[in-house]
Image (cartoon, rainbow over all chains, first blue to last red; front, side, top):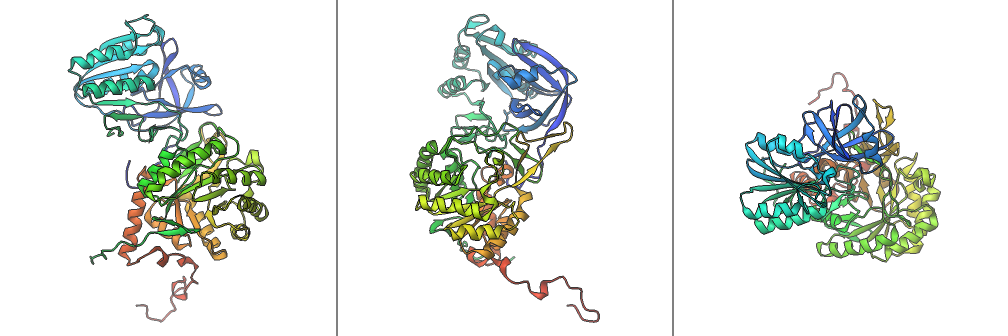
Length: 251
Length: 332
């Protein structure tokens, strides 16, 4: 956010899909041939002309990637695309995660893990250590377990049906990790209930945290108010918010 | 550098008897969806805040893309998403209560499909006792459903104004469209029916096309142009309305800086609407613009907004016309 009026436009760019990877039962990773100057935690709008436009976390910058889970008619259409097909992007939008050295715990709930492998790479690049706690309803909904292991992160898994890792919620694996100490900061993305539970845990253990919220977004530029969450605009002030101050992260 | 006078210029102004501590008004459609965001605008420096336009029935609004920053402002077609006038009453009540301690008046905003429904919507939102009611007869993004907008003709604009005035004693502001051949005639017609103030202007219809797909960018195909590109259009409209009627004008369209606000007030605006500035300048746009306006006035020795208001109405002096120098004369 700056005091000077901004000149730069943020219009759509037509990108071509160069790679499509199945990540889990309902998530594909699309790598595109376009570039965006962005940081982990920021998002972009993906547009299929004549269909719809929706916000997605940026899952990687080089190549520019998005992890798309099939949750509705728009993501259904995106899943039908193949390498060589085009998709339109605009962005980046919002405040992202900050990368600092130290030991970070990355917590992803379901497809909320989308921006976290990108963040893990940024943290490792600046000399940090990464633990990942991934939760989902079942093994088919877990996202990025292999990607985190390939990065050398310690991965802790929880599923509600017990089909992988510990049976329970991801907060059940996070709680002992935070209470044991040694975690310098926590970064999370996932359902609101998970983020609220993590906020309590972080406050209790005095762990600084950055939490990325999901919201129904319309304009993406902070004027329509559709994404308001606790008096803040998720698209503009967030999606990443810091705990305990509640202000947007510094990025 | 000379020392600046220590006193700050008086930035207060009035709309229909309602005092505003600052001339900046949060424009309708920006943030007005929730009481807490209206409070945020008030804290940032808005002198009054306008809620999102509500309609008798709830509206979902248009699909995305619904707002695009194209480099010279914004093109948007949100499609008046709102929870409906009945639900809006409780939101307005909450907002009015939160704004009262800040001394910032609340402006409700209404729209409807028929003249009669405008009256009904006004009566409904009046229950929340907003300080003012803005009558939005000029949204460019709902024409397909409503037919021609009410702001298109003096007769229909006047009919809506009369219906609203008959439904409530709360002062009403009529929001006009720039997309008419003679905006002064529309202004005279609504003032004749009792409009207490005018907001000029709503967005100007426009369209963006994506070159690669050959498709309109907005899901609604066309939308309303706001921001920098709208400023010259708004300045002309405000100038013409100010010459035609004596009610206060909320000059709205492309005010991004303190200098823009000076220009709008110079054209005859009583106060200034701010909306799209938030895209480029963030939540603190109001405080930035207020600071710039204060410095501008102070550096030139103006003590109040009255001293700059309506300067464009003065007749052009021969000394500032673009005449070539007469050969042989000395130009000092």
